[in-house]
Image 1 (cartoon, one colour):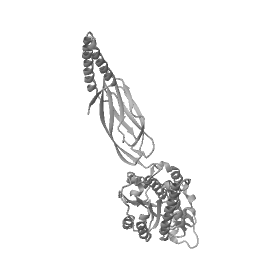
Image 2 (cartoon, helix red, strand yellow):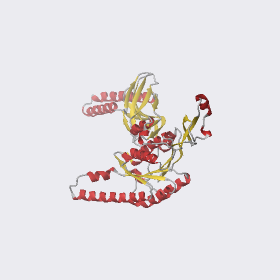
Image 3 (cartoon, helix red, strand yellow):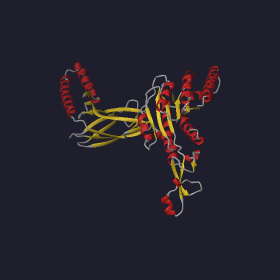
Image 4 (cartoon, one colour):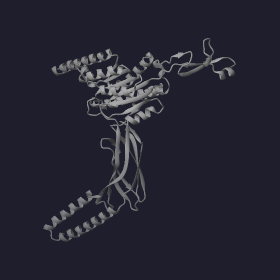
Length: 437
């Protein structure tokens, strides 16, 4: 679409010409000057309009990452090339998603004949998911500067915004360096056959002949036995609430965003420990990720959940528990991540009782930071006193609800969203250390 508008210089020239016409009312000799000026201005305007419409649009290519991390400034590069033989003046704005923060746009350019320019700007997405970028918006100025023409160049692209996993990278690096043993994870060893080979050692009285490694025995010229260890690999399943409760925002971060960061961290740690990781969502978009423990599990998990957004639905944990039991018949560690209220307690208890028959269940119940801030605020008026006691009573009821869940044999984490990553990892290692599965 080609839309032409007059520039400020043309508007000023028209105002001057109008002023000359008003002066001609009282000064008849000025009439000829007014007519000549009008004809000249009209001729220049028509010629300039003709030239700007014939100017070819510049060639633009965009370079950027295939995926962007949420909440982080990411660079974008535009290569603009003037394909015309005459100079080109323009103003450029890349059509990024409207709710993204941007630095470095719009940009004014003056390109010589067959000249190019490389532009860089930065984008910061505030939400996860898929976002289209339709193209670039241009204001091309005419050679004489009387007109500008708005043009939209089609330059389609699809942005994928992933959770910003780097925010918890210090925990990931700890795992990558194989330092997680400090949490007390142990592997039980036994003499005899087992599920997993551990090491070679000298033959001991009581070893079976099946344990003897005859190649190593001939090489060492003494009996060498294989030692095995019990298979300790487990299944870790996330049951993630994507309902309306997870729409709450603390410190500019949504509860679901924080839950995804914590989930990915624990998934990474669990895969490093040899456990299979799976996921099921409820209360919104339905996603199922079957348990697996290959090296690329976390990347595949990220691909399957990066665009999940909280819905306006009321979550049904009981239905989710029934579906999970059908999908995963073997015993597993089930981590339920939710944000509950008193009216959700009955459904949560029913779901916990159902899951507890076959699985070990941990419920991570997120708590709004505004509640803690209300308790810490000074009490200076009747209103603040009433708010303090109301929040205190609400939290006391919340603790009683969580105690009932614990009496059902469920482990409960009552944490702020920012505390969830380390709380989940610590509880996971506590369960591994206790050998509860």
